[in-house]
Length: 357
Length: 182
Image 1 (tube, rainbow over the protein chains, first blue to last red):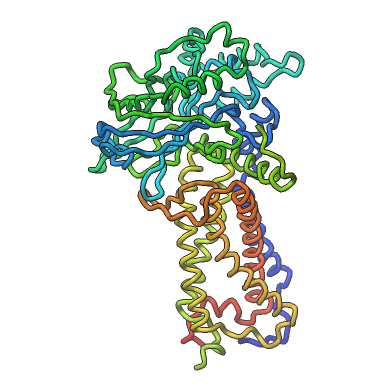
Image 2 (image 1 turned 90 degrees about the horizontal axis):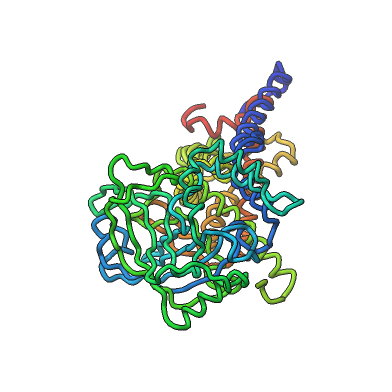
């Protein structure tokens, strides 16, 4: 070791070098972390906008806030085994399900009759700690194809404080700027609200990849086809803001409710990165098995409460596609989950009251 | 030569130091980057974060064994006591964080009910059963300890450069040079 008695030359320069190295690293870190980039669409900003629109309802999901836990199982018939090596599709395998039926929007006390859409999220529990989570919607296409456009749609639909409704001019301007919304708008115009959660068809909307035992990739979308025939919302139901949960309990009291898990396989050239575009109706469809729901439970104390239905929690044999919405859903759901679990933890420590209903 | 009074770190210690320096800095940038975007980067950064974290956990255990086996060179005799104390304290804090961060991350995902998938088909066992309260506490700790670790690494780097450029006392060289060299 050198024992230097005289101070080194160019001391100021040397301290400057040290300072610069540290400053460059710290700045790079801050940039990557988004602190120097106010225009970047972060999960935080996405969730903030949802909160701007619907308010903060502590402990609840920031979107699809009103929902009910359901429990059941999926029995595979083996038909999808040739497309995906995921254990969930093995012939005869029964996978336990924890699901959630919900309506879109950030208000956990919303009127069931308002939105034309219902949603169904499922968690399939598989062997070896694997899971398959999916969050489906009862509509044929998504309104937009990118996270940025979804964020702009949220901003355009912010309720006017005077009327409590979105500003029609802002909405019109958004749709005019986004021609990709046309298929969705065409569907909404004719969509009839269902009388029940259990008699509508749910779709993954985003494309995914199935990987078979030989390692070959197949682009797919999946959905649930109900056994119960569709009937529209009745006049009596319109008067009851909670008719969907009432209907669900009444139907489950009579017996389990079933859907067929339908896998649609893309042809080469079908869009896999754009959830606004449906695939042609003649694409190969496979009935992969039966989803059975046996019972429902309130979400305040039900098994779905603490599940983040992140669409990219997938088992071996299923993977995400190049659809940019998937990454955004995964990131934003995670931020919503972080916020509501923190609120749950805070309310658990601040009082011993019953959980919110 | 007694390894505890050697002028430089052992070869395994030097290799582990520089490899882990690269991995941990990468890990910290991946971590802040993945929670700050909804783009496709989010997905592949998360997929990188988990196996890299487990690799750091395995390596820090090896590194502690190497340190215990080969020892460390002594600090310069003329180092002021406060700098000596800061050096010891910051090194043990670095080791503690290198061990704690991957374990907190793994436990946090278990508490959140998430499968801890390292690679396709490789899922780690749950360390705890799902609990939103525990998840929330660990999520908070993971963020703030990560930022603390980054701050500590900047301090460590500044101190190393201070030894190299200002004091010129051979402390940085003990991590860059072979033992055979004078």
